[in-house]
Length: 152
Image 1 (tube, one colour):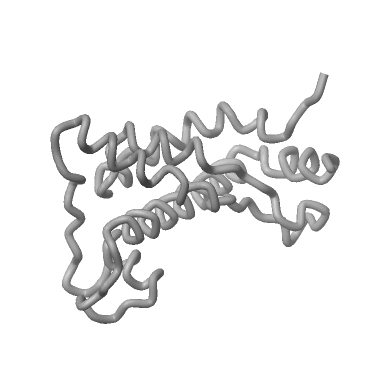
Image 2: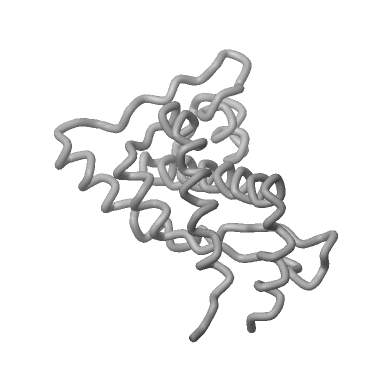
């Protein structure tokens, strides 16, 4: 029997999913879309051999492949994505997204799919940070780190 360290994340992910709900509600994604996004994400413990430097990261490369399906979900639901309001000072999800993309002005020429991809990546990064923080708070980070270090 193979004991994959990622299998040990299941309970923590359910808890973080609940905590993350308010962040998700402030985003442009529905719960159904977020579920699809998370199917395209794989977690990795970077520097797992280093107790002080190890950290959880999300491999977000496959998200690009599901963006067209996000559009299909919106069409099936009969509407457009929820708008994301930008705070005047650049804070909020949209402001962080624009900073992530390196935009300082509103005259962006990005396509909606590129913007949705970037928004999804920002949310995944926030989720990953919350998941690692939760594991640390619960005293489970060391167990996860060690298990990840033991796997090829």
